[in-house]
Image 1 (cartoon, rainbow, N blue to C red):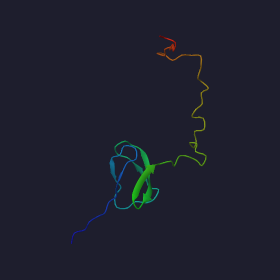
Image 2: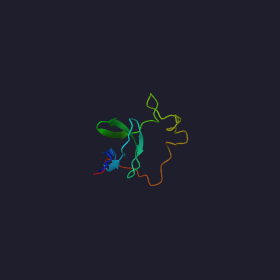
Image 3: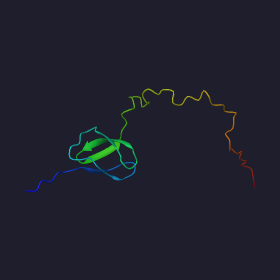
Length: 92
């Protein structure tokens, strides 16, 4: 008697590589793509599908624990970055 184990192979939504999820998968299961290291989760069981893991987002869509990620308090708007060039759009 031959025993066949059914595995679920799905495509990574980021890099499109095939990921073998194994025989036992659960809805919401966290998966990291071995090819592009995208953080994913199982979003459907039949057929098996993966989506991006948004577990670190709260209900408002903000990243938990990092409310000041866009804090520009140390940014000086008058200071040019090294290598910045001034473009003259009126050149003919």
